Amino acid sequence: MTTTFDALKIRYFPLILVSGWTWNLSRWGVSFVGPFIANDLTGSARMVQLAGVALWSPLLFGGVIGGWIADRFDRRRVVIYQFFVTIPGLILLGWIELAGELRLWMVYPVLFVTGIGWVFDMVGRRVIVYDLVGSENIDNALALEASGGAIALALGALGGGTLIQTVGVGWALIVMGALQIVSFSAFAAVPVIARMEQVAAAGASALLDGVRMLRTEKSLVSILGVTAFVNFFFFSSSPLLQVVGGKFDVGPALLGLLAAMLGIGMFGGSLAMARYQPQRRGLMYVCGSYLAFMFMIGFALAPWYLASAVSLAVAASGMGLFASTQAVLVMDSVSEERRGRALGLLSSAIGVLPIGMLVLGEIAELVGTSLAITISVITGAVLMTIFLRIRPETLYLRQNTGEEEAPTTQDPPRSRGLPPTVFNLKPV
Image (cartoon, rainbow, N blue to C red; front, side, top):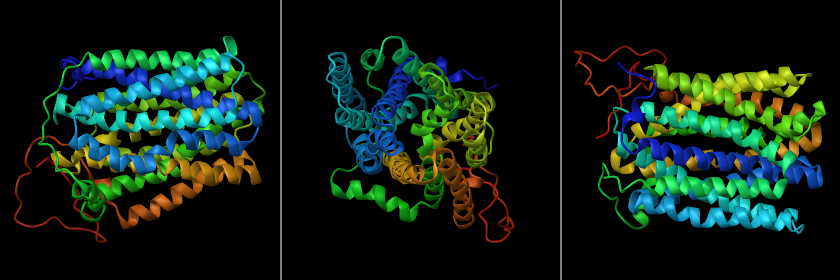
């Protein structure tokens, strides 16, 4: 019988989980502190969004390269090496602020470097998790990882706001660097994990193979399309959460608590996926996206702090369903030796986020933040619906049970040209 914490019984997985959790705690803390600095120094929605762009833009083009590196080179070393760039950057920026020399332009390069580190950490760590736990435990393992990431999002935003209010921006940045030191220590304690697949071919042909999958892997394209719409139209508003909260006239701690609702809601949705592991994981992925779009409108337009916070938490619970199924859907949609490149494409799909941030920032400058967010999520829901009519494969993807389907004498009937009801994806 499946339980919520089955994957925790696998040796070394708890260490990887702790490492990922503390890395994400630092990243989400930085994603609050960076926009806070921009908002505090300029009061401009455009400059706040640019802080988000700096953090997330490496995913747009770095994902394909990061995925190829994860397939081609030692994943453990790749994950470890990124710490030697992100940790010094955060601590140095904190010291500069404590010395009273911080300027806005200094923030953007550090956010960009942190974003690069996240690309290699996300791609490398998740494929290592698959190598460690195997296909029979991957749903549970990634749902637990998504739950930990959601807690990190909540505590990172809340902690970032609280630290700013109590000890200042400089110490907040140093604490974020210290959290990455903890993450590095936990991950370094994990030995080399035997890879489930052979090393991918080297050279430009292997790199381009990741791009070619967009033409040959229809299910993968369907999954990535949903990811792109959600990130462009929903997550692009994340740096503006504290700007929306500003209309309630509260301090940094309560602004952090409001932003933390995003993580609290995601934790609930992810934990539900870890516990129940529904067979229709593709349907959960899509339904979670629509739930997020719907309740984000309530967050943006609510006239009271509490109503806004509750709406954001409900929207985020949909994101918990989305986040806990996303990576495993991608990895199960391709063969084992291409998983790193598929995850690289996933990070590139997430990488449309900074473009969405730029667009949303400009709209917010014209019509106001709350109305801009409302326009964004409604547009995203409509366009994603049209896309799923054209590329509906995601809706029919099921949990990989490890069992072969019984052969049938004839193909199941189809309606309106849609795919078969059951897609039982198996690594080949």
